[in-house]
Image 1 (spheres, helix red, strand yellow):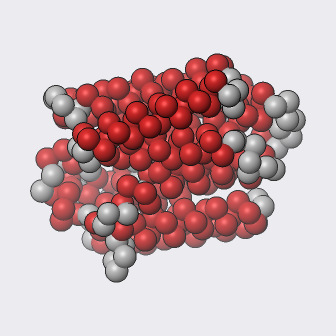
Image 2: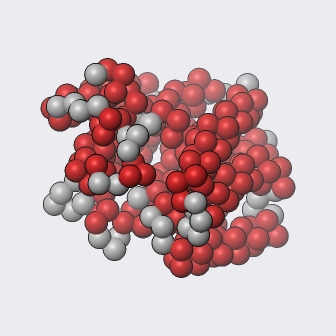
Length: 265
């Protein structure tokens, strides 16, 4: 049971958090900001990842009956191994309480507020009566909002939430919304959002709000991983989605984390 519960946290999906932290840290590095709290940054990254692991477990519990009918989700933890819902809730609750306790005792109140916003946004997205994932607001409140909050959590630990330009926050929001549409197999909105994100990225690069090195280490690996996901909209959905998952959630995550260690130490 413990193994299944741990699997339900989707550990490799921590790549989203690692990518967001790397992007924020590149702005600190290239601005010449002294990073005097590397251990706090690593702690923040860990807490955000544990929180999201708990939230993924709760999400899978609330979607259990739906996921059972979806062949692409046949490998989800609670599909392969049946666990009483009360143990899942207890497991997630312990993780969430642990995260907020550690944050309140060791990190800034602002960081804890960001964690609270992540929690509230995901609960509103997942749980009734709101359950935004079944409404037209789903693309706006899921991956997109959560990506912005992930970046902001690192920026707060760096002491300046706007060290990352607003245009870059917007780019990540639109790009993440496009990714959500790809996963939901909606080719038209996914294509429109991809074009919009690409256009904004060109502006960001031309205006000097992101330099070529930042682009190469924080954006290109994620972009390359998104290529098979985009192709999944038109051909070999299962194979392309699996390839995208491996590329982003495993290969890119290792690269991102190594870059973070180089920057903060």
